[in-house]
Length: 148
Image 1 (cartoon, rainbow, N blue to C red):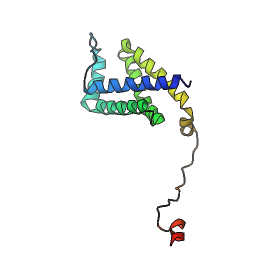
Image 2 (spheres, one colour):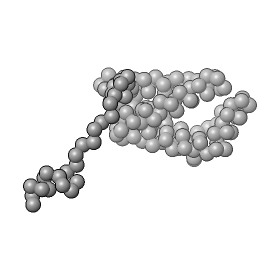
Image 3 (cartoon, rainbow, N blue to C red):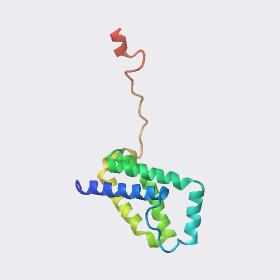
C-alpha cells in the first residue's frame, strides 16, 4: 500500500486537474458522436446555472491538493460526491463513457482506505461537540497575568 497510495493519489489528482482545466480551456479531443439528448439536457442545466463551473473549480483545487500531497483527506471528501455524480451520469445517460469514472472511483477507494484513519472520526455514530480551548491570546489569560 505504501507504493500504491502515492501512485493512486497522483493519478487521481492528474485526472481531475486535466479534466477540470479542459472545461475552461478545451484541449482534449471531443468524442465523434454527440451525447444522447437526455445527457445534453442534463448538462445544459448545469452549464446554464454556472454550477458546472463551480464543480470544475472544486475538481481543479482538489486535484492540485492531491498532487501537492496536502489536505488529501479533504480533497478526497470533496471529490467523492462529484465522482458519484459522474459515475451515475455515465451509468444512466452515457454508458459508453463509464470506464474512466469507474477507474477514478477505484483510485478514490484505494486512497480512502489508505487515509481511513483521517475519516474514522466522522464515521462515528455519536460525537459530542468539542469544547472551546482557552487561547493564550485572550486578555485575562493566566500567562498574561503572571507576566504583569
